[in-house]
Every structure is written in structure tokens, then in C-alpha cells.
Image (tube, rainbow, N blue to C red; front, side):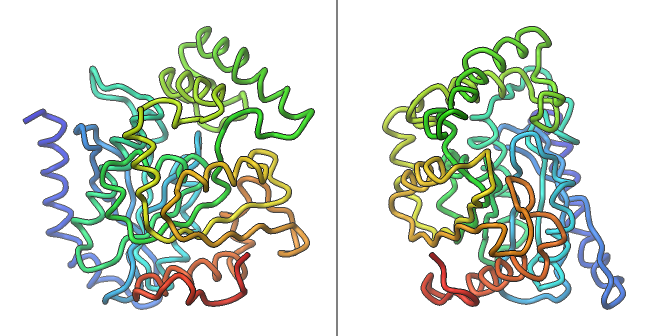
Length: 327
């Protein structure tokens, strides 16, 4: 057994032994986090955090998959809020990002690995830790794009997509699409080759590993985006996902125009889908690509999502969605 896998297994055993004790000592009304030992399906250790629920019992457990270049810390307040609503929540960093660095010797870091190995390992780890709860995935941007890459994505009971989209540059309206073409054909490949990584100062958040950046650029140059590679097996995996999807998009999101959002949703052909396309006027303030996870939306968007997640945890059908009508 590889050394890093033995280490993660040891840490998971310690986690299992002490979690109940830690939770039993927590004072009512307080919030806490716990390290959540996690490994990708190829044994690469991943940094993860558990936000335990305020109350125990049946329901849903939430797994948050980050946007490209965003670390798990960005989602801490959102995860804390869900925990107070009775939804234990796990956040994690993809390989090569945030606290999931450095990589073990010989371990690859591609965007494909984020889905096929990291997300797959996260799904398996959360399932082991919460066998009695339904698993709901919240995917932000690329976190929603990669769902179909995980071989075990069929174990997910429901999905919330936030600003998730296809990355093909032609899906952006003119003249923005020409800037996107320049980004993927020239800027990202050139800067990545120069620095050996994609530096965060380019506007992508955290530094991106070389393999992640180059594969991402390659996908964005093709009309079928990530379905351009992987053959019919990959297309079939996306088409087979049948978990209900609640998809959010925003009119002031320059990174996810409506055509790009629709293109991604079309890949999940078998999944019942509810679409929420919102404007700043709908929620009283700008949203953009990252605004959904700001605390200012706690009483509006977060509350709406929590109600939907709680209903999924109880096995409610997709039509039985609390709150405003979806459309």
C-alpha cells in the first residue's frame, strides 16, 4: 500500500474515533469545524473540512466542489450556514490547489483528475462517513462541470449548480468572445509555458498547476468543451446522470453567459432540471460569478438553497420545491 494512502487511512480512523466525542462536547448554538481526512481515488491526499450539523438525524449531507482557482476557504461561511440548518457540509481543495499541495511524486494534476479522481474520492469519502444521509453536491463553476467525470457520480442524490457553464469561447457574445479566444489560444498557453503554472495574478484566483491550465485551455478551444475528449464513454456518463439539478445563473455574470450555461445543462440529458436565472434587481444587489457565496445572500439565496437541500434529504420529488417557483 502506498505510504500516502496508509497515512490517510490512519487519519480517517482517528477521525472516526474522535468525531462523536468532539460533537458531544460542542456547546449548543456554537459552530465548529473538523479536519476531514480525504483522498482521491488514486491515493492523493486532499485537504478537506467538515462543518458538522447542529442536530443529528436523517437528511442530506452536502459536498461543495469549488470553482477553478478558488480554495475551500471561500465557501466556509456558506458551509457554516448549511450546518446550522441541519446539513453537515464538506469542503475540499482539488489537487495542486490551496492546502492540497504539494503533490506526491509522480501524481498528475489535470482538470480531468479533479473530476475523475478528486471528486470521485470526495464522493466516496463522504458516503463512508455519512452512510445514512442522502448526498447532495453543490458545484460552483467548474465544480458543476466535472460531475459527470466522477465514475461514482451515480451515488449523488441531487445537484446544485452555481454559475456552471461550458467553456467554449464561441458561447460568449461578441465582442467578448474574441477576448475569450485570445485567452485560450494564446494567453493561457503562453503564460503557463513561461512560468510552468498559471499564476493567480492573471485573474484565476490561486495558481493553477501546469497540466490543469493547459487542459482547460484545450477544452475551451473546442465546441464540445470537455466532451471533446474521453470518447463516447464520457458522453454516456454525462447523459446517464439522473439526479435532480437546481441550476443558478446570473445576468451580471461575465464568466457564465446564458448560452454557456445552457450548453452545460444539455450534457446532463437524463437529469430533471430546474433553472434559476436571476438579475441583480431580483436579489437587490450585484451577484456576478462569485457573489452567490457571499454572506449578504444568507437570507435570500442561501435560505432558498437550504430549503431545497432539506427537501432532497427527505426524498421529496423535484416538483416539490419550497419557496419561489423555479424557471
